[in-house]
Image (tube, rainbow, N blue to C red; front, side, top):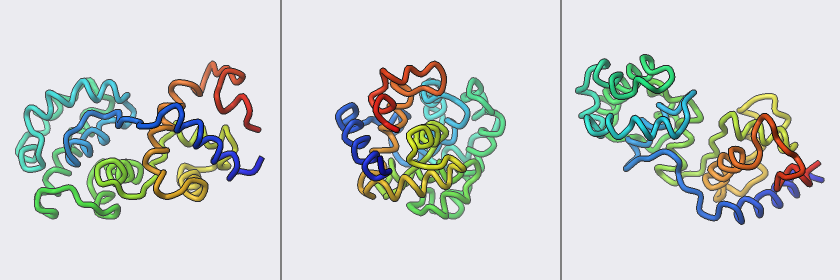
Length: 205
């Protein structure tokens, strides 16, 4: 089966299973989403959602966050993986938003990627989910599914992103990103996967 045909059938399945996929990270605006995504590296969304209420109770704007000490931020996020580095990054990115962007999160991929702790995937999530801009964030789960299903050769996350952007219409990218994350967790795990019971792996070749 051609990649384009696979993608079309997969899209239909994803729309049936997750017609309105929710954003898994609790947030109120672009800044709180940005901080939550930074925190989510090597940590589950569930864990991030446990720590962000206490952090945002202390500060939920760039100006307020920039005024906190690294220790104050760390105290709120300590149970997240890599917490010391994340605390430093969150303080510095808040300072940079105040210093360089008037205290607002920029609607610009390049500007986002210059912030501490913000890589291409994080910037893509913010562009897609906070601003509704066409971006296709590819995490390890989506990278794994695309390779498993033959939608990409799996050589790099960057290549997978390019391949998926060609296969799915631009207006679907943000939705497909979320749908694939949920699908991977619920139906298509990395280990102990029962292929015959999977809505995609059961037919895809």
